[in-house]
Length: 300
Image (cartoon, rainbow, N blue to C red; front, side, top):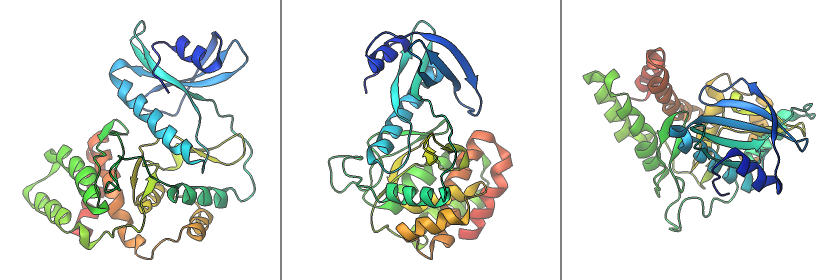
């Protein structure tokens, strides 16, 4: 989808004829962007995210992530209607399908687990580069929250997780580390291959999959949004679902039916989540420091 240079241009390009915004209703829930429900002159409603021009790369990366997820056809993902910048108002925008929440289908969590497993088993060809040796990463860098997320291709999952996930976060948090902790962090990075396996296949990951980034869509099934996508080990996505409370057992049982989870996952889960806790430390401060140290002491 091409970038538009006004909200009106994006709406006209999508709907095929000029439409106007009749009203905009502010929506809550996000901590980065302003969000609105736009009511249009053609009777449609759309979801709009807006931010400053400096944040345009975040919205463009989100559009690319949503498009990659939608392309798999495995799980509900809102359609991208347009994105771009408005020089007149000094803002960037992303227009998405507006999702009216429906009544959950029977066995909702089982269906969600099966859908996520299908996403993780979808073909990842073409998502990284034309080089068949590039198995992990993504074709462009993106963001995890406001933090830049490096997606430089790697053949090895362990190398990717070390170089593109843990190491950048550790470097950003350098002001928190004393000499003892620095040595522990270096030891963990050096010994990462003792804890993490190389996956049997690469998976497209949502990248930031917790309960706040999923909802019940108009079809009564789970839909996901606000991605930080990349190609990696599916266990990293599963670990994130457990970081802030987790999903019901039915979700994980159904996932395991479709894509078996190795017994060793439980031993690796906190190591995957160290990435997200380091990111929270960098974004929100010292309150996450003890959680980071707890995991670090376990593995190093």
